Length: 160
Image (cartoon, rainbow, N blue to C red; front, side, top):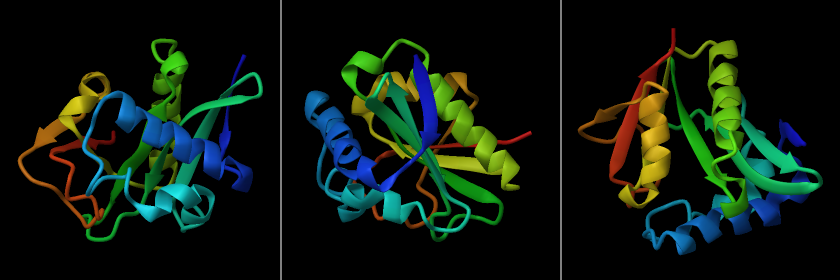
């Protein structure tokens, strides 16, 4: 049984482990990405920011992934960033990622945002394909100040 809920303080360690594990598994760059970002170790605290939300997926009592939205500095008015979208290996291909992304997109709409921006890496090709299926379009350059200069895939989706 899948449960989707908001992040709790006790989730910090397991979520940081899942996130960094995905980078290691896919041999993605670590510098200038969420892998080396110190906020990755303190996601509960980070998502106390106004107009942000981090959804956590559990299968049974086991945390298997997360996805959220965050008001990244420097984004255009009405735009929010889709962030921290990571799943453990065993959670992939089961619709959990889609459910997490849907929750995040719905949260953005409920908070009054008109578009969602994201940053990714070529190593995360499965996620990029999912973003495209969800209506995200590739951008030629980054937006905002995420603090992740190692990311070189930028996408945006207009919310209807």
